[in-house]
Length: 214
Length: 219
Image 1 (cartoon, rainbow over the protein chains, first blue to last red):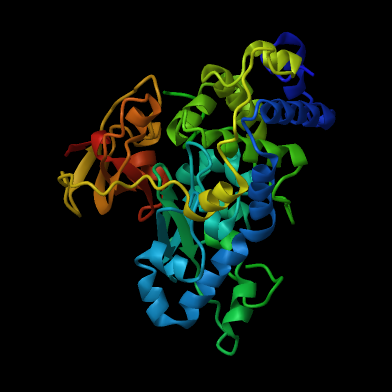
Image 2 (image 1 turned 90 degrees about the vertical axis):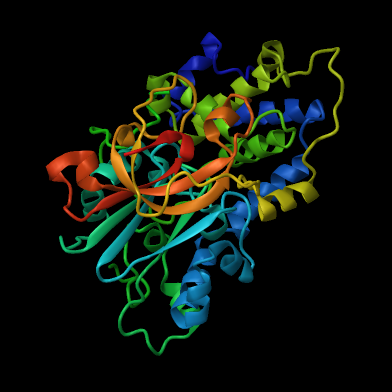
């Protein structure tokens, strides 16, 4: 199995990988076998990593941070020191070593992007979706944030200030969305269930009821 | 480098496609590439800035055509050869060279769990003088280094305001070149959207960029 994509026979798969996913799958399998055979990689460590990001670390973590901030003013205050405050809920680590939380208000809307690659706060949001890593989002979020937000169904008034945060260094950003009106009676847990990944990236607002769009 | 990866402000990339109920990995091989990169990173032969630059070095047309994990795989294969973990012959045959010694994996499951939980902090607890004060007007340098840099093109030469000091961090440009960490302050700099994009931008909108001290000059 030739793993090397720079050799001529292997080159074509980038053009039609959708049609032949098994080719890439076979190449990666061969690469993994080679690295394991050479004693460079422990398969169990790979499984640990994949399991963590498939099943344990995702936007539910960030939603709990948001719901706690909505219900506990002292916690919200502590979020100005985000690494410690997020660690209180048990989250932190790879690609969230240095966190910043930016708060949406009726007059300020925050949007997170990484124009240079795909930096994203893994411990609280998990691995980023394809659109966040894509050229359309990365190219336009900084020059036309309002157009991007409209594409996500969010039409902001001109008197709302839009702040785009480009993750160009090792700081990772989390948007603290506005708590929707009419949710006064909900518990912290019920509130967390309303908070979406998109709202914590800043491409959506949190809807007062689960499933309804805002 | 002025590569296609530095795409902030470019036109013509098309609409954003949001996939409902998107899986973490679309194919199992994507997860394996993700994990293999971290497992091999544990050998300490490269750093995060080196890995970013390797992706930037992909030919521009390839970069745009490939999916995220295809780019990650292609750059990873280059690094495996460049840092002498594998030979091209081994990549082509898929079997270790006869003389190849057997190593002991650097990343065990226990160390993987620690990596996930602790990450790899890039802040440095060293005293470095603050060159700019909060609220100070600054200019991002008009600079075009050929190698890795994290000052996006759209901000170069533009005026902004120091919004906050994030503290002292490893400098990406020297770190990517194995020229040392050169710890220095990283600032959040607020650029008015109209400073960056002209009159088409919202009058009160802004872009905040995290900027290393070396990228700034007094305005």
